[in-house]
Image (cartoon, rainbow, N blue to C red):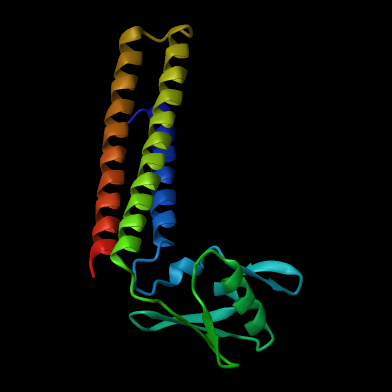
Length: 183
């Protein structure tokens, strides 16, 4: 593969992996420790991810257990969860925080699927923007003594990559939608 195309494929790969990471934070009725990925607590003056100051386990299908390494952090972790948009109420017994995931209603599941599809569209737009940037860059190559045929080949290669990554986004959206709708 041409190195001029390779850098755009790398960008598309990053877009897809960011999209997958974003979907991992959407809860589908099952306990998923990744929903805590974006939460931080103040640990000796610096915001620190909860995973770095506590042991996170999933003892049951719909429960996450957070055991801080220092007892003083339990209130801070609880506050961070309450301040987040997770919609979960932490249960604190003084040593451990338990997050119980309620069963999702059908209406809520449909709303989550809509959100997933919307995020999928955003990822596709990002991939298409990368294609547009690549095509613009390739058009400028004609002025730098690169043949029009070579530029056309580069554009075709970028289009094939775009199609491939858009299909992959669709597959990820379908899988996540099925996961959410499965009761």
